[in-house]
Length: 248
Ligand SMILES: Nc1ncnc2c1ncn2[C@@H]1O[C@H](COP(=O)(O)OP(=O)(O)OP(=O)(O)O)[C@@H](O)[C@H]1O
Ligand SMILES: [Mg+2]
Image (cartoon, rainbow, N blue to C red):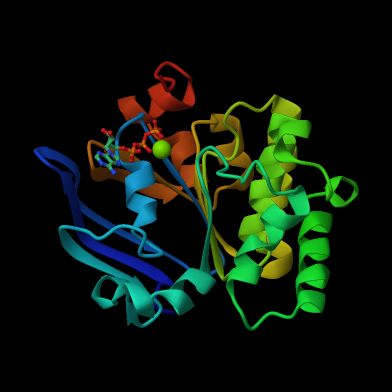
């Protein structure tokens, strides 16, 4: 069997007295969509920030392919951050930049991308999220769902091998959430991208997930396929699926 694309080994993270991650072990395969579930504050966002080296663990290892990210210095992170794109919780768009310039930002940060190449790739990314017509608007002039799609285009523009989506459905109506799901799934199917999706949206889980990991109190509580999740008789998982333990 192929070695997993991303390996998380015994990952610990603490902020002062608070132990947020307490020994997470998890493997993500190349080309799969892995959904991360779990109660609010359980450490999901903190966990994924370690993958492109945006956070340093207090203990443990992260491997991306055969590179140990946790051993790299900040200035050696470039190639890893090219491989792992991130759609942040909340979008994190620049208000004073147009949609186009927001999406272009990661490319322009890299000096080796010509302006013609930037134009081409941003246009393609905006096409994927169906925002071609809105390239010159500012984030304040588009809807919340559209802002999410801009954030998605920005994560996609570099065509990374893996994209992490931190709550891409939050605050969206069901139809817009569907659209986002179709885009996420199409990136996997048509571009071979490995997807890691944090969500509280149970409908989306069964639409997009190949596998699901359920986090609880800084540990992996359960991991399995979405089919296994559907048929699980674990009380906590059932409560989650049936909406008895929704977030916040
Ligand atoms: N930079 C930080 N400094 C101090 N504490 C932090 C920091 N980042 C996260 N935390 C704490 O770590 C805990 C886990 O946060 P995290 O954002 O990972 O939760 P989450 O599972 O993503 O929750 P949600 O579903 O609400 O997004 C929280 O108690 C949070 O306050
Ligand atoms: Mg979070």
